[in-house]
Length: 279
Length: 292
Image (cartoon, rainbow over all chains, first blue to last red; front, side):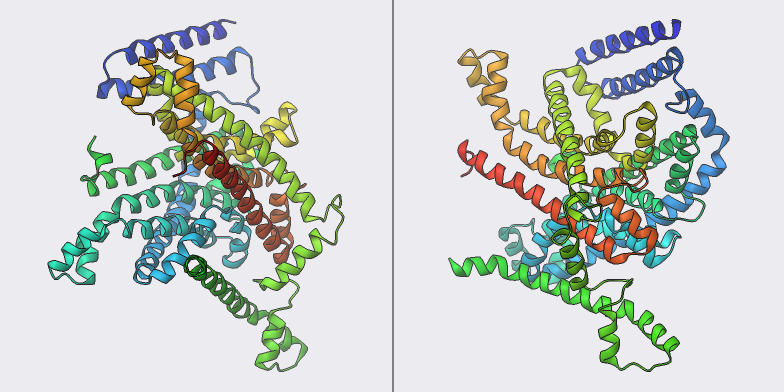
């Protein structure tokens, strides 16, 4: 009972603090503090609810239990991280985005291909591509190569469509100016069109970060060696070891946010001139 | 008129044909090894044309040729009864129902959150960062857990799958609607003020109508995401029914043709669902006079 009261008190406290803080003029500190208070409050309430209502750890383990499990099984988590994130997701992401970028540069030279590939690419990007996972696992075996292949297929089309659109982002005035400078195709590409395409390219790269992790993890549901985050999640669910599952999810969440944040930071550095970054 | 049509459609047709040609070529390339292997064991020598013929008609090819997939789809949709467990229409309808339920739940949640975020500064500052952060989490990873946990509480069937669809589809709606509800500029908001419009009038007559184009764009993304969620949600239930179950069962037994037909069916489903929203969008925006 006391846990429930404590939970209610924390809820009111967090809420009150946030209402007060968001009433203040918006600064960097409040902009950061408010969401952090919200998150911490949520986790504390979760802890209190689990303890107060005596929820079985098979259904929903308390955050403290998950933290303990996390600290105790860092070696397992590290092995899974290397297998899924570094080998599967990251290699697939690099290959997929790289090949989509190269393809976009080629397509860009032929307006005919552009008009054909853009609608088809847009269409394919909306399809449930993740369904390719079982096929690719069959083709490339159970190890990380098949996961990387799934990631390649998943990130390819969003990246292609965004890059092709980005390369069209310059207007004729700017291109004419490059011509009056007697700049050839390559010079125009590197000095004008690629920089102008960067906001679009980074949009594709950012979409790709989440897709890459999802692809690598879900592909492991269709068969994997005895390590990897997807493998661990599906087997631990079967063993009702939900605290380990949550520990894996924490890893996935941290990695996903870090991956996205890293690309966003890179974007900030590269496209500092764009209106959306100046604000 | 005709020239303009071909200008737009021509390249698409060429690309689609190229995809089919590549597909056939890949089918020949990938299936040759098995055809040769079979011939070697049978002790016969195959000519090139015989090999090509064999690659097009294997039972469990590495990559089935398009016409094999087409035949399988025809067999499992038209020639099977809808109620049969082997009918693709039955499996599609299972997936479709949880997709739609999840989509409706996700859209309602998304719109509600967006209204809260636009009208409440505290919510804007505390919830919005987490909404964005929630999408950097590979949420599909916890799909098996959601299903198992909800099953343990006694909720099974449609709802657990719909919950996953909901989670995937609420995000584009929140982001799009927040943008849309904030799209009226100061001039328009001031105009509402001079007409002494109340808060709810401002919402119903200005903010909501001007958010419609944004809403439809996000609905399309949300629908595609909801379908992916429903398919993934069917994996851990042990492949009972649905397109995801067909994928999993196919991968267990090496039935590549079955996998591909489920995949094509899922693609067709996604395309038609998004297409329907697109049609509604065109009609609604036209009636609202928002199409120039």
